Image 1 (cartoon, rainbow, N blue to C red):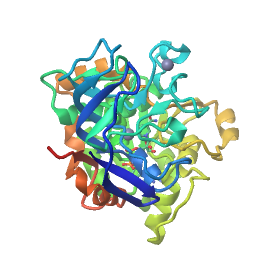
Image 2: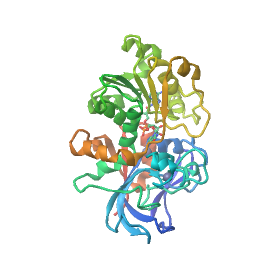
Image 3: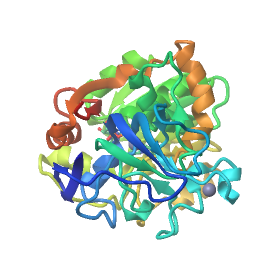
Image 4: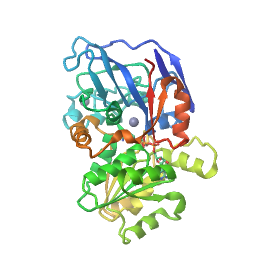
Amino acid sequence: MLAMEYRGPYRIRTVQKPEPRIEHPNDAIVQVLRSCICGSDLHLYHGLVPDTRVGSTFGHEFVGRVIEVGSSVRNLAIGDTVLVPFNIFCGTCFFCRKELFGNCHNVNPEATAAGGIYGYSHTTGGYDGGQAEYVRVPLADVGPTKIPPWMKLDDAVLLTDAFPTGYQAAEMGSIKEGDTVVVFGAGPVGIFAAKSAWLLGAGRVIVVDHVEYRLEFVRNFAQCETVNLKEVDDMVVHLKKMTDWLGPDVCVDAVGAEAVGDFLQHLTGVKLLLQAGSATVLHWCINSVRKGGTVSVVGVYGPTFNAVPMGNVVNKGLTLRANQASVKRHLPRLIEHIEAGRVEPHKIITHRVPLEEVADAYHVFSSKLDNCIKTVLIPPG
Ligand code: NAD
Ligand code: ZN
Ligand code: ZN
């Protein structure tokens, strides 16, 4: 089959690979109909995630058709069209029973911190991902969710990660009616965090980025205010000024490890392979949020050290929340929002690219060319 393959930082290609097979009675094989490239894939592409092995296939956002099921699978049948949450989880462990599916204890025997994720290095279990024609779906009775017949595949594929993650980012902010919410990052996750902040009762939503076309998009999609960080001398002072010097009630980090490399590249024009040591956005969140406020982090940092200004967290009495999203927990509510027409996730898709052109697609998405916000890869056939 055709699949994306990682060869090293900034080097990917499409290759022919053996098709996946059922390895466990609870596996299913899914024929991929759509897969997306995510901002999280860029961390892999930029070489920022440890233990990303040459030869692996990325892709944790995909929908497809079930073509084979293992002997113990009960909830899926051949022919079902499913959306597959990016988390691989068992559904029964201590964490899954608390609906912390992103922290499942049973799916990632090689690592200590993260749960299991498709196509996301051996730090999350070493599973191959869905930027391919076919993918093996372990624990197939637990994660995959049948797509309602009325739902567009382009909406369904955004329920595998970007929308639920943005929603959870806003939810972890514990937004109270009328709160001012600042979201850093106008990528797909930040865009959905801004939209979700309104759904959860925010009174004011401000999104920060340095890519003007993304700010323009989020202004229209989520009816929010925006700040272009290129036009601001001191981000903390600027946000305080905008909020009667109190600071926002909630700050969301939807940028993560990208911040340092991406921002320096923007300033210097030089492509830098940097690990995010100083975590600019995290500092801005902690230093600008009001006393007693909440900082919600969904930006991915990888299992590395990051300098967090803990003194300010303590002295300001902040609540600091962070996690991988637990996609499945949010699905019933988000499906309702889509059905009611309150959110049209597919509108963030700007690019549809044949899987054969995956290398070019990563380059365009990573370099923010051609007004790219979200890219969908279409396998042949
Ligand atoms: P993306 O790369 O499309 O968007 C990131 C945005 O941040 C870009 O628009 C970029 O211009 C902007 N940015 C860079 N530096 C910035 C800075 N200093 N200040 C403000 N904005 C800045 O990625 P995405 O798909 O939207 O994902 C966003 C983050 O969320 C990534 O770190 C991704 O890994 C993470 N993520 C986490 C989860 C989870 O479950 N926790 C799930 C999906 C994605
Ligand atoms: Zn993703
Ligand atoms: Zn579990």
